[in-house]
Length: 128
Image (cartoon, rainbow, N blue to C red; front, side):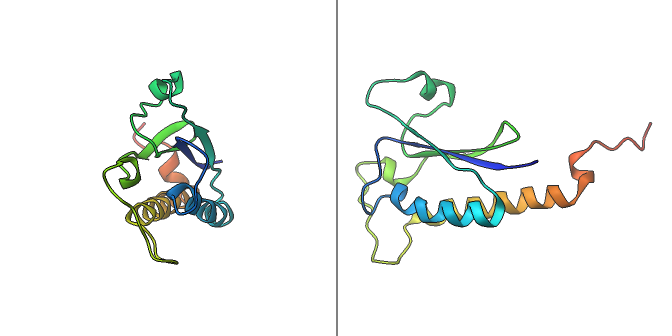
């Protein structure tokens, strides 16, 4: 079964108003609508092997997997840059949140299309 797995890398537990806190609501929506399974890993101040393994330079970062393969990533979020102040009015989405939602929508649609079209999943053997 093709399952979208967004793996979230964050420096700490969510604070009010951060993208991580807002992703909690998104997580429930995408788990329900496209079967995504979200996982989170807390990056500490000291260098960890997982940062090297997943090529994580800045947090927050999201790495998207399907069937054990990385299919996309978002690692240049504004919230990763301490020089950029990210503020939103209540109920308004940040640029980061909009980018993440758009990427999740795109990947969920792509995976749903592959599930419904078995030809996309298997090589064409008609030339043999």
